[in-house]
Amino acid sequence: MTSITDGAVEIQTTSESNCSTPAWFGEVVVLSRYLQKHGVLSKINEHVRFVRKRFGQYEVIDFLTVLFGYAISGERTLEEFYESLQPFAVPFMALFGRDRLPARSTLSRFLAALTEEPVEALRTLFLDDLLARPLTPDRQTGGLLDRAGNSWGVFDIDGTREAARQRALPQTDDLPPSFRRLDDVCAPGYRGRRRGEVVRTRTVVSQAHSYHWLGSFGNRGNGRYREELRKGLAAIRQYLAAYPLPQERALLRLDGQYGTGAALSDLAGFAFVTRGKEYSVLDHPLVQARLHLPPDQFQRRPESPVVRSLYDCPQIPVGPTGMLCRVIVATHPAGKKKSPVGVTRAGIVYELFFTNLPKQAFTACDVVELYLHRGAFEPILSDEDREQDPDRWCSHSTWGQECWQLIAQWVWNLRLELGHHLHPDPVRTTEFAPALPPPQPHTTPASGYAPPEVGAAWKAGRFAGGDFTIQPDGTLHCPATQELRAHEQRREADGSLRVVYGASIHSCCPCPLREQCQWNGSATTKPRQVSVLLHPLAVGNAPLLWHDWSRRISRRACMQLLRHQRVEVQMEAGNAPIPSGTPAPLSREQRAHSRLSWAERLARNACSRKESSMVIKLFGIAPTFAAFLGLSSV
Image (cartoon, rainbow, N blue to C red):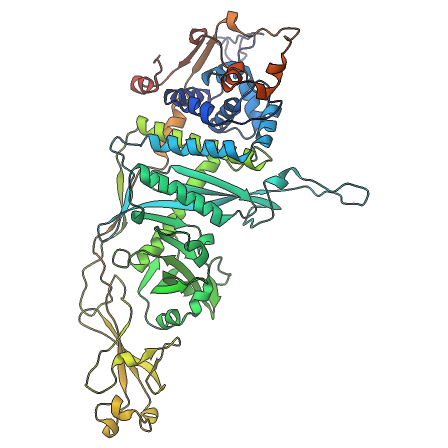
């Protein structure tokens, strides 16, 4: 054939089929080789066992192999993945040491029949494999350096929801009760801005500095958030024991659904910061009294025009159990639209933040910034949705869907690990918050204020300032229950703020306790005054430093390494499987799944071809990286 536009261009066609390998096949080769090198596949064969009658010739490893390839491919559906994989089914399964690709319907039945025990065994192997190989030889984990010079490891626990839309079903007396396939994995719940009738919630745990996934725990509807929280804490404790890191220096950034006293009581031994949702705390007398005093700090983010006034309230009981927390109240004027978070009272929006971080190392603004910086956690979920989309429906059973999402996180961690071998970048340091400036005379302290203190005794035999109690309405009450109101504020030389309260002369003159209260007793012509001092908070002046790695560069380096390179698959013609017209008869032992040993069951679909019978050439791989994987470079 000759081109019409240019006679020098010749186009040749052939009737022989010569399928091109999918763009993701090279990455399957690399990751499968890496799993074999570290014995992960053999550990799965040994520990993840699932007994089911009429199981056929396949084993758990056969179906997990398909899920690994599905997670690597990024195909939208399993149907599209099978269509791309079908011409290369034999070499694909041979990469994992297996012989035949299970059909898509067989995979669906396997996922529907899965139980809790094999999935939990797989979860254990997933975390053990992550902890067995640190990112750097010196086992660096990143961290957060506070203003007092202490190092913290930050972990994120958050949930992501997937909504499912369902067709309307007729309900009449002559029809049987309706049954939906997603009833086992979904239930009515909070849908947010996603359209759908039912949802499934997946709680994920992430290391905030290396961006590793530590676990995934899914449930119907809004999930069982306290049960999932306990499982996440167990995974974090295992991570801390492997490195090792003290549990007292592990900081949890929690989603707002954990902002209750009941949920926070499960965090014994961990530091935490979360958005509170028990707004009854605002009515506590200590909080109300603090809100009538000047704010500690002002907080504003670059991408938002909202300026929050921050009030730091230590040792406030939260929840029915009265768990003591450091409560930070953030206020700002209400806008025309209803605020999506917080509660609005008298035109003011109140937001709550709960933490137990020490005030000497974190100011109120640091705590709020640390929680709002969890916005770096949402981009991880966004990257996960674009690259793997683990929330898509892979199975209509609970444990089948859980197994798929666990495999997707496993592939994420493997890409991250291999990306660090391609680009071994050192830990980067970011100034999370600048150092506090030295205090200036008669100026507002940059660190905020310590708890308010009433003036000390000024004359023997007279009432001291401690006898005057601060009320929730911002006033003081004297021992005679008379009211003192604030009428003056002045800045001291050391940066302290003095708030002067005064009583009414009409209340002091007839008071029977006047001799114990005023300087000259009944001869005094002025009312009693009391000062409340807000001293500057003693906080370290060092900056907050955040140590981590790049979130995308190292991981996507592994993905893009072979996506634009050529992959050649060569199979010897003599070793290709020849379908027989009549299948060989099976014995009762071969047909009965439970009568075979584990070794016999695995051997039924094990790859019997020699390695020389299949040659896969990968182009564009550096010799050092190929040697690390145990591959021969082209």
